[in-house]
Image (cartoon, rainbow, N blue to C red; front, side):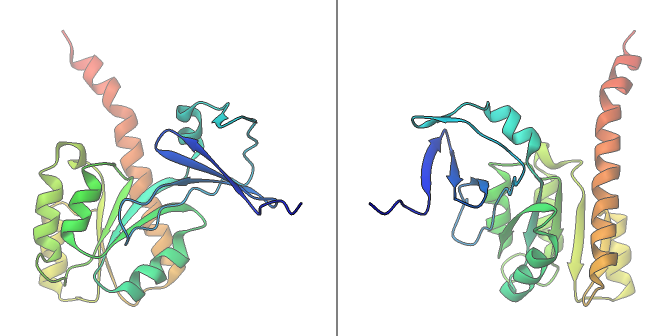
Length: 200
């Protein structure tokens, strides 16, 4: 009897995909435009029946940091995904509306946001994202072909973590993303200490 190439084990809202080569822990996409995958090559899981032994919280701790990419240009989404997929869990959406829907269900470590988009441009989307209580401090980087100095100044003035213009060198691009996430995590780690020291 020929064995199937893979088996799916339901795990709450997630799926565990086991292949003969390597295990992959994959989040179910939010919509048809999303790309969302955890690749845990070194993770060993014991499976009993249809339940994974590992706790969900343990799996999530070992998962890649998540980046939301918002751009109406699908070729740009594919390009960003190709550069970052080995180090991050990428969610890609093609509109501000899609971004807001995604952010109602998850909080990424960083958002990459285009400026020129139909319906809502990047600055309008930025304002709506910042209005979400869960997204007040998450770094947002504008990633756009618009390189006008006044637009760059505007983005940084309203609180964007960075402003990257296309085309960009992949190494410089990834370094700036790492720096933004590191700064965010550093500030987030210091919040409990600041709150405790502020108490009378």
